[in-house]
Image (cartoon, rainbow, N blue to C red; front, side, top):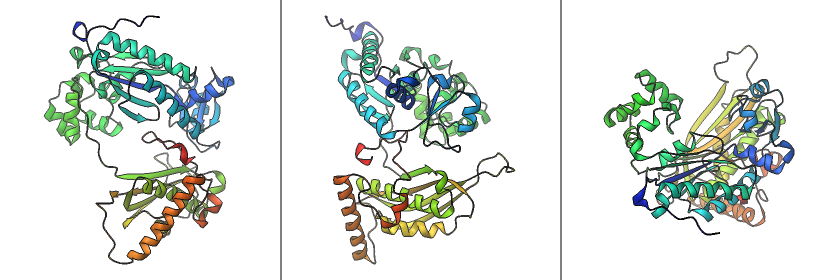
Length: 423
């Protein structure tokens, strides 16, 4: 079959970026692996328990209003026939790598934005709109080769920001393009909250300033947008909305954390501490892999709501500690146990830990005292990491984690993709 003739860049409109967003990613994989789930409303949940949330929903469930973050009880009320599927993070990461390979066969990937999003910068004749549309169709066909239930929405635009906006404009299985000559008017059918970076708080700030429509937002000056955002981000967005092609320089990582909804058997103050220590162990292992040090530690616990408690937010407890630059399990566990002394004696439902104020080897503050002890702890942690890398995760772990070493399995966040060796 002869290859289709490529249009000349000089003869037609052009785009520079292609953004691919996989539709209902986790749920689509479950329907691929289990054909009996196809065409049925399903919700993927971290664990099968009444106090959890949906982390993904099939389009059959989305039709009833179920979406990511919907509490399970609410989801079941919206969709009485909803079928629950316990998440399989390792499977989703395996599919992710297969999808990345499939996309890369068609066009080089410039940035993997998350487990279900990737951006590709087009070059040469790929930027001509007819050619970019052909390329998008080819990508969709290549994706079907990975899994027949997998669908994606693709956005084409003069910059990466607008390509992501375009990918959200038609779901599922959409293909939308935005041209520089049509901007910003082509965005007027959207709401300000449809733009990446405008969350609920920013939207409330805009509404307070009388900005409720995209037309009103586009009428602002760069200086006014900078003032509303309180930073240069607002001014950058003004230029992005008009097709300017630049993006933020990569910023150093500032924090690293782990969260987990507790299974019923771990919903006591003592058991929740053990799970928190396990989460801290996983975070510290990742910290050492990244060759970073932490200067701060925080812990947060969410508690069960009592029947008569007002609906404004679930009760929670949070504590922070500034620490000397550290990344070994043993010292971090000491700090966490000290913080835990302030944890209320209520029934916990979720726990999270976070390491922050991260620095690299060259930026960290060296210890004035106990340097030899720190080196011993570092060597012990490094030996544990090496054994786990060779023989599998959790082959070696701190002795206090025996009862909970499988209580907080590796999950996938939307900002980072765990390597397969962590499963």
